[in-house]
Length: 448
Image (tube, rainbow, N blue to C red; front, side, top):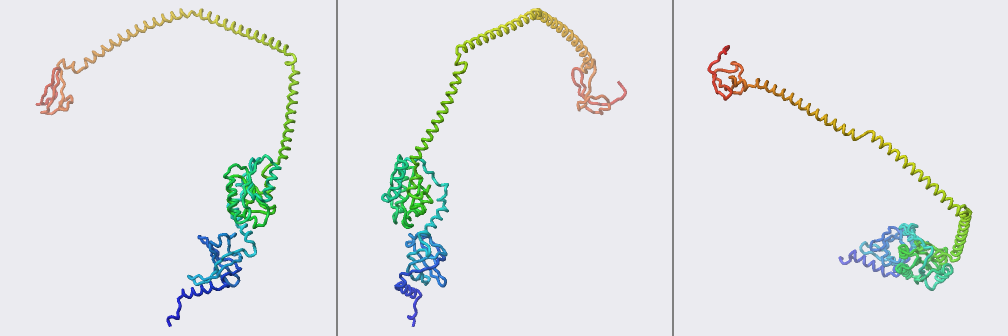
């Protein structure tokens, strides 16, 4: 009884094998709407395909979606081809997608619009990044197929319009799966050579599949990072590629690119002729003006009568010299007379006598000053002697010479009254020639 029960794993593997061996499920074509789309970090695409009544889980591995020309999005209707199998871990069947294309819109057109939007957001189409095309290039690189009609049109137009420009054709593939790396390498090579002023990148017309090499992101990157300015000329006037948007200048056709790359020799000659005519008219007008000026000079008095003019100027010079001599003589005379007047006034003032008188006055004043100082000194000396005599009379020492003494208590204070002492007090009596240490034995009032 126990052997009748299967494990979940065994049942799941059995069902998976059934699905994988069913020939109807090995190659299934489905139409559906994408939802729950998720791009894994490893490149795998996980999504759900649904219609109005059912849904199925699906996965498209990185190896299968690597060359997918567009990015799937939620809500997009697609046509897919793949194999139905079962995912053992969850026990659910799912579709392993091998191919995918949009339903109702071309895959290449969708990829074109998606890449265009992506590069526009990155600023690749911004005019700020556009480089200026040289107006008179010396060397042009032509990146295209060496066998197509486009290269012949470009070379013919360049030769006709501006024959002095040098050209170098860098051959590349412009169609097929190898066109993209070939175009990228051609642009890189032109920049590495460093001898070109301008690059013309293009080819003739064709379908969107034929022109697809110029719609790849790698080509757009190469154009954007090119140091040399690029003119894009892909297809006919109605054809537009990603290269046209990224390039520094777009031309409607390869022939138009050649016309934009170089000036017209005929136009340059006409412009040169116009400038030569303008210069000739200017020189003629300038010469006529200078001739009129010369005529005026020749008719002037200086050129007509040069000898008279010289004699007139010499006469004016003589007059000026004479006037200068008169002025000098007058100034000299005035200053001399003034000097004489000052000399006479100084003589009348007799400065030597005045100096002698002044010296005598100073001497007299000095003698009077010395006499007065001597008199004042004598008077003050007499006054000083008188005051010294008076001080001597008041000097206690002089009084003591006449037999008087001065008595002090123990505090060195003069005793002026018996009231200031007591019996047995020690006192000191100062005489002219010394000091007596005494003691008070008795006090008596009113007796001398």
